[in-house]
Length: 427
Image (tube, rainbow, N blue to C red; front, side):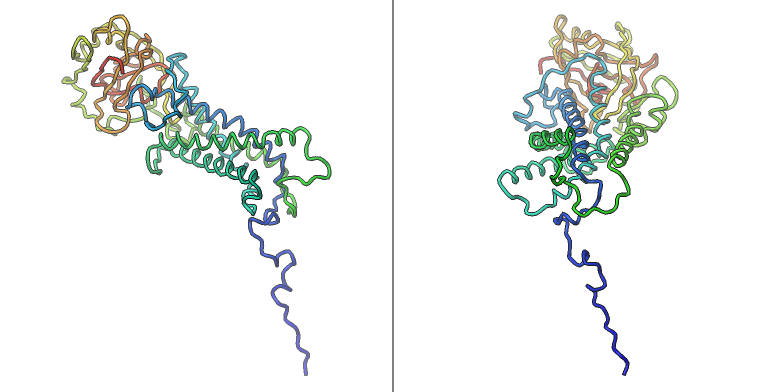
């Protein structure tokens, strides 16, 4: 009778280390040899500098809207004490908003690979159980929840706003503003807890005999060094810089800014061939609205005055070389605008000595910022114009014909196009 052969069971056929079910909560689940305290510390210090810059320039961007001037400028009316830092936004240097918002958006984009690498490096700790071993550990985990959740929310909403994809519910301004303060709470707590440890690791390394935090207990064979991994993260950030930063520059750099809506395209020849946000067609400005029947209405103590475009051109004309800079981070180089000073129009309205604030209304009937308020310091600046021409030619319909506002250092949306009414007075 032939001898029966024993068929090995499934556990006999598998290596011992695969028989135990591992979950993300098990340190042995994470086996990359790249993870380690020094790798994480380097990424953390880069984020410390970069996110601080992004947060500060974000606050400056909010201040640039002068939200405490008039409700039409304020997109977060319930901010309460969170608006403690607001101040009258200056008009100089004239490239101020172009710089601060360009840094805010560009640095934010460049930090995406660094943020993802940092989250990847600490994910074993994020998945560790139990979630809280002590009161101190619980507070640390709460700070991490605010930090990670806030950072991901801010980056996601910011990137969608840059791409003009408003997939999130509610106003971008409100969501991004409150999300920034949630992120800051977690960021400050995390820095206070972890910065001394990160500095110590970078200076002295891990003391001999101590286990290395974040390192895999059972790592796989290395296929990439930690320096190589950092180089890959840096290369990703460099690629994002090259393909996005050019939206703030004319010429070849803009043509390779393929990751942003205001990059990668040519505007064509001519004096009006520079970037726009909203076109006349998009906001339904018809030729009849801006034709011979158009009149500018100016209101103030002197009453209500109405001017045709020809009458405005007959007034004393002034020039100013100013850029357009938008909240999405794109901007133009300085364009040569020509028109009537806002301070001169304020004098006609009944304020000959001390121009006040002005409330600007556009022919645009729907959409955000069809109405905007400007501070008295903006009206007083001699470079603040009701522009009628740009670069030696009449404004094109897309650039605000028959007349638009241009103010130094102001966000693009406050440089109202297709102006219909100017109301001077304290707001």
